[in-house]
Length: 99
Image 1 (cartoon, rainbow, N blue to C red):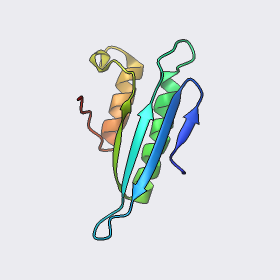
Image 2 (tube, rainbow, N blue to C red):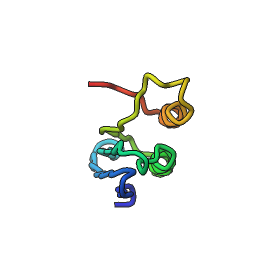
Image 3 (cartoon, rainbow, N blue to C red):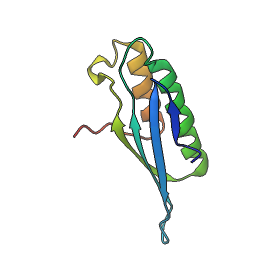
Image 4 (cartoon, rainbow, N blue to C red):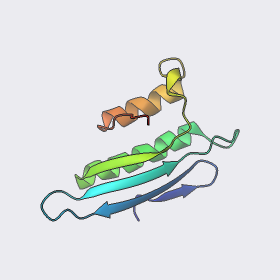
């Protein structure tokens, strides 16, 4: 529950922790970020995800975060907010996988 977050018009996150009896626990998260301007703040979303990632790191657990981030990753390097989000996720060891 400490990671699950709801910020109206910004993000909805639900996390569960699976206790692996022979290894580290695994945290699984699903995230949805609406893209309804002008209230869907990418800056607030990035900050919220940063706090979640920091908490996961503090707890020293493996994590998988999935979801619909509604961020145009093709704007990496040209849009500062997108670049900041991607860089923050990479700095915590998360890789982007598109399915």
